[in-house]
Length: 83
Image (tube, rainbow, N blue to C red):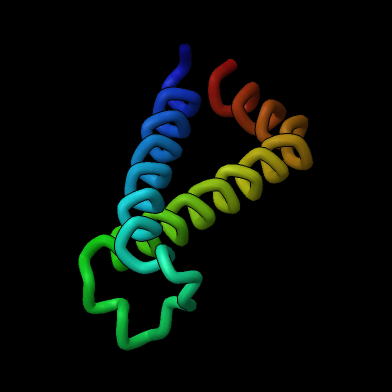
């Protein structure tokens, strides 16, 4: 298993655990989470992991697209620099 897959699995486990804790505390009565309830560390952890994960996935997709688009140019430059 490569590093990206391991990080993704650990992130999904953390996200799931934090979501379960947040759901236990705040979703029992079908209530909506308001900003005043973000003082609790479980809700903060859930949203932190959610946004960090979304940011990591978006940056990974961006880097993969750059690699696909500029692959030939980067290989050409590396052949010039390292003959």
